[in-house]
Length: 189
Image (tube, rainbow, N blue to C red; front, side, top):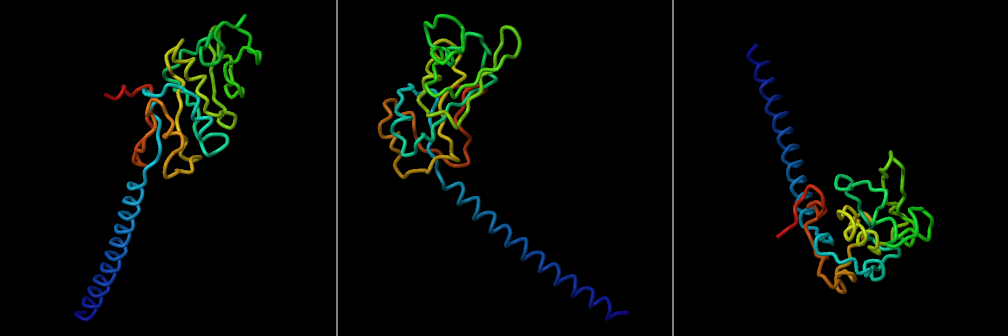
């Protein structure tokens, strides 16, 4: 009987040591991964500084640009007369191409109920010109704004858009930090 307890104790100690080693290796690997991810920085546009100069569309090394329009739906008024969708001074509320503000028709308008419409950005067509964001801010609530899409951006060492940005709106932030967004977030000081 005494011998069996000793064997069980040894097995217990061995299995505990194995479990502890696996747990320690997993912890070290997790810390290494977290530190590697935290050390990676990405380019970001501050939507409160952006002046929609159009340089994001023309100066990005990618064609089309990694900068895309983002729509904060919680801020949107779903207006029939959307300043980010329709040109100023258009003859009527027709959605004909000559009345649309976006040069690539990247904004899709969908009827919800009278007088509300939903505006959805087609990122594949968006070139990051900022015309919609400028129009939305000038005549609306600013629910459309520009952001660099991290899954598209090649993360240049020196962003060519940041070099020519007249408002210094593009900067590096830590990779795990969220996008700078409008909506529920207040304007940074």
